[in-house]
Image 1 (tube, rainbow, N blue to C red):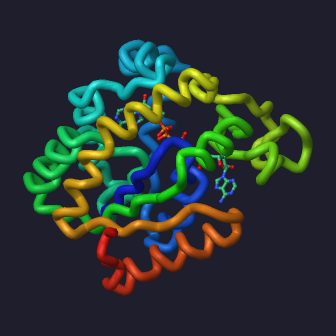
Image 2: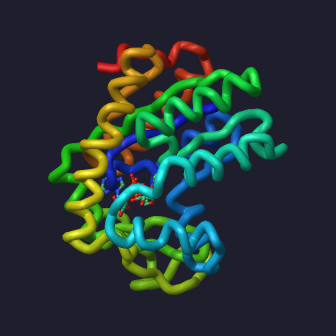
Length: 225
Ligand code: AP5
């Protein structure tokens, strides 16, 4: 099954993508992580994406579509994939529809992680992450066992370059103007399920798991409102 995770910056997509993927027994991929990896390694993709990401802007649609088109035929995605952060504009959604149609593959569902902007900004302001394995922490709500050290790989934790206040504001502007119409599109298609990510992380984990389990049972539809 192909499942898209959508939601505002800081809504919890990265924190919960693995859980959804585990329930569906498919891999998960974050386009943000792919792009950050490309920037760190100085690839052509990274060179193209870096200035957009630094400014909190979206990377152009044609770049994102060719990135995903290249991955869609990989054997790892044969049984499906949880896509964290793609598509995130209306042109990307239309382009993704076309890519899936060419391959005779259906879009399973779009899970929209729903969180107030105020709560999301608060979470982003205290986020730390591991550039080596992309583990996500929060100094207030989900700290590592040892200050500044990744629990998983023991590497040093960092603040993400786009988590500065001005860049967070720019990312929300992009979310409202570019991702909003895409959310309306999926809602009109009847493939959108909203999952509230307000509240403590354990409660959200449970809600996300339940939503994923409903997908495997074939009734994860909800009404998208
Ligand atoms: P991307 O990496 O996808 O960033 P984003 O969408 O802005 O989302 P975030 O990763 O910031 O937040 P999240 O929802 O994953 O929240 P998280 O789980 O970390 O994209 C980055 C950039 O790449 C974009 O700006 C763009 O430039 C480019 N890009 C990527 N995809 C693109 C595309 N398709 N098209 C064009 N450009 C693209 O959680 C946040 C914090 O909250 C963490 O600290 C976490 O520990 C904490 N937390 C989580 N849940 C809870 C809870 N319930 N209670 C308390 N704290 C919690």
